[in-house]
Picture 1 (tube, rainbow over the protein chains, first blue to last red):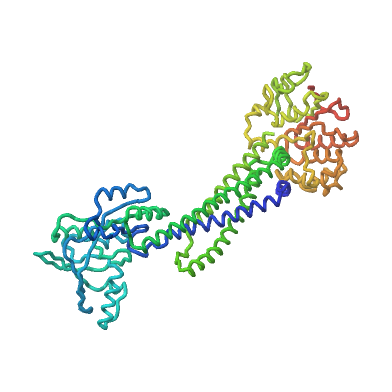
Picture 2 (cartoon, each protein chain N blue to C red; picture 1 turned 90 degrees about the vertical axis):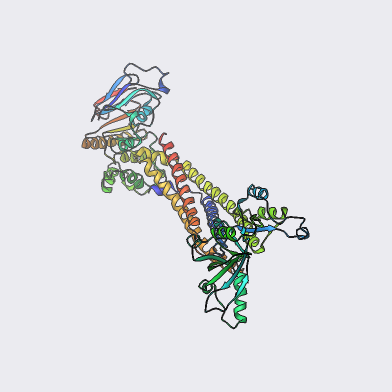
Length: 393
Length: 213
């Protein structure tokens, strides 16, 4: 009966407009947050390098060849790179300063030997478990991260020798060894592949191994830095790219493509997210105004009910529950349309060759609950304020 | 429950000269279970009195007490309990819901305490000869019929005091007397008192005493 009394002054058209606005806003909010997270996750775990990390070097020109321009980085140049706001960290890539060769050391695999180039990077840049990625003097096996191109080359050799090719997993079981040497000394070290990378052209070894080997077999004490690792901020990869151009630096194209793609899509989704937040805010505001209007139209009814002995808490609850139910239906409809929308978009992305994760993101669902919670709280405050104001009359 | 007025002077009435027997500015007590006529001419504050006792108006100097509690010290929830169980009121402007039926208006009040059965409420309407209006919208009733519905609504709760602000202004003598007798009977059953404000002296009922404004 109270419901009949309090909710008969309804302007259905205004309510429907507010509901449609809130529904669209919530749906886009959910969708944009979900895909913002998914796009940021894109590419993670695909490589051993951390997200938004690239290896850069100076562009090789005729001047470098003629020894007029230097291809190595000075300490000052590294400091200047670190000062850029869109760069999180810059670390030199340490290289071997002695001769290294890499060969198979497994009876089941024919002998294959090649002179190689080994490098090491700060472990913070690597997306690899630390317990696997460590070495200390006396350890019998050196863990390495192998360039995938090297495996392709190895497989080409296997194929030519009439031996079945090896997969990533199998390659990690094959025994290999390094031959470390300088003009006077020579030593062998067993190595094991623990991962592969598409982003680095050389074999990566732990820092401790590189330091030890450089100290023991190094020909020259001065370590030249020809490559550096740069970790850029999310969605600011365009600025990193611009800086590389300006400073005549270059990186592998693949690394830049992912970063550029993520930045571009991320920025677009951020814009949609911004619009969605505004839409949710505005429609929430319209619903709250609708509540205030309803309260104002019901001033006589509310005041009389209070004079008859109805509790302000009870009347507040009636308005609060009505609007939380309305917004609950909106939230539920938004969730359903998000699921349908997501199914369609995931298919669209997949057809376009973008294999982003299809699992639901907790944050997007949490954002829905947060928006619902905020709306419920604001409705309660407004209903309480309106009812208690009537109680003073 | 006694109601005490201690030098109460509503702000809007402060500029008017009040007689020495007026309750405004004096110490007056409404004794529990008594039937009181509050007689005053227009503009002397009859509605202000009803609204003040009921806790709606607080723009006055002095103190109004229920027994020993200053009524301005009551919390919102205490007022809810008082309006449900201690003080019933018939407002001068009746304050009915015109879009609801007579039944809905009465049951809306009765639901708070389930004080009467639906049949008992219908019996009260029958005494006042408006039981056939049970399903009619209040807005369609005459003022006299609406006044009788408002009186029955006030009786649909337990109370210590029934405050009525010119409840018979649209009723003829016969209906007024019938109402008064029914009200007195309900008050006796609850050992409650009532205050009836009126423009004139009322010889139709043996009031316990009369107050002036």
